[in-house]
Image 1 (tube, rainbow, N blue to C red):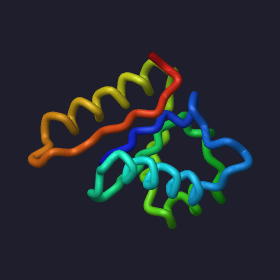
Image 2 (image 1 turned 180 degrees about the vertical axis):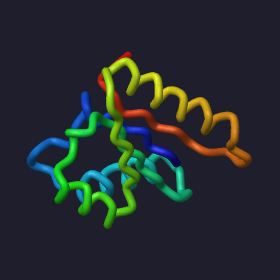
Image 3 (image 1 turned 90 degrees about the vertical axis):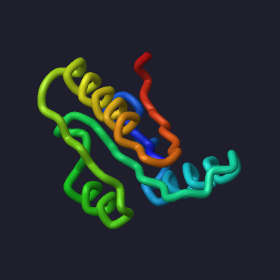
Length: 102
């Protein structure tokens, strides 16, 4: 299961730490019957994460993808990754996109 998360518009609430977020996502996905590996990819503007938060996310195996430029460019890149995943998957997989954009 791949989680593509637009952090610039759909950020981690201040009262939750990244580990709690990961546990909640894993728990929800398992309740839905999905048992495969979980990968969480975070996208956002370069200034979205502090150095400390980047280190904490890396320890938890989150992939962090900072982008320069305007919001539309970031959203287009996220959608390009999403479509690339769909094209190259050789086994059934699940994609979850977290974003406030429609």
